[in-house]
Image (cartoon, rainbow, N blue to C red; front, side, top):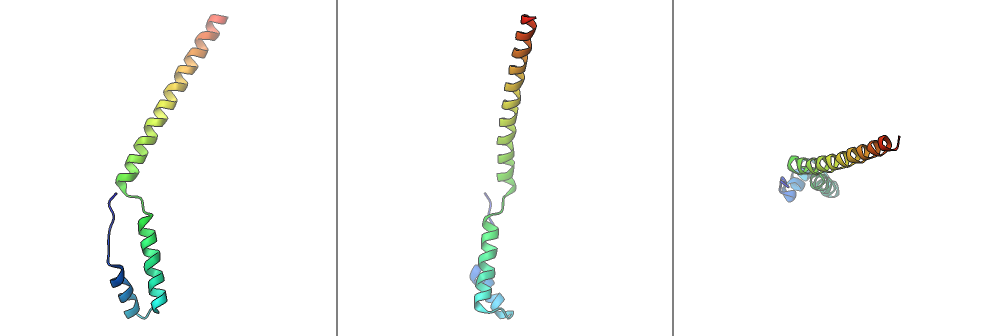
Length: 78
């Protein structure tokens, strides 16, 4: 996954220079870092969707075969 990095110390310094208390600046930096680490990248999302698509196709094909077998058995029975 691709991540964007930035200098957290510089961000905290800028927030302090803008009038934030040191505790507030550190809290904001922590929130930004947490939000950034939980972001989903387009590459990861595409890979995940591809896996789900393959699983769904397999399941549908299996159900289609089961349904065809059931219909064939019922036709043979009657």
